Structures are given as C-alpha cells and as structure tokens.
Image (tube, rainbow, N blue to C red):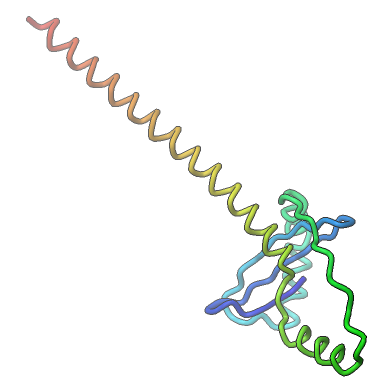
Length: 136
C-alpha cells in the first residue's frame, strides 16, 4: 500500500500482484493520516480494500529495462524512486480501468432510469387522453 499526497488530498493505493499482473484500488483520505490512523484503518477496512482490489480488472505489469551497471547511477535512481512515493503506473491503470467500468455501469443505469421515466410519462399522457375522449 502506498500513501501519497495528490493535491488537495492524501490518497492510499493498494496494489495486489498476481504473477505478472496487478490489481489495484484506492482510498482518498482528507488530511494526512498518521501511522496509528493508517494502522487502525487497515484493521477496520483492510479486508474490504483487498476484496475491492480483487474485483478490479487486472493489468499486465510492464517489464522494467535492465538496470544500469554504474553504481552511482543506480544509487541516484534508487534515491529518486524513494523520493517519488507514487504507485506504479500499472496500479494507476488498474484503478483507471475500474473507475471506467463503474462509470459505464452508472451511465447505463441512468439511461435505463430515464427511459423508464419517459415511458411512464407517455403512459400517463395516453391515459389522460383516453379519459378526455371517453367524457365526450
């Protein structure tokens, strides 16, 4: 799990590796969580986060190029990676896919609701029209 600041909120991304594929989910915190708060959060909601991550679509992890042989360059790269406490790009892609799937499902539900509402309104208009014609 990686916790990082994504202006204006603190975000936690949980990555689950499945061989050469990764599944991920994220949780948005408001203020910066302390270590005890993170521990309590994981105790309470860790199972739910894992279940959510397991339901998200899997994304292939890109293979990293071979590491450079120069030890100073390797040390700089390690320091740079430690400074950038960001989730992997595969995890970001997995979260993006899960969000896109939820968005499509929500749009489909909204469309069905609008169509059902329009059909209901049409039926009401037909019923009123029939009632007006029966009165004559």
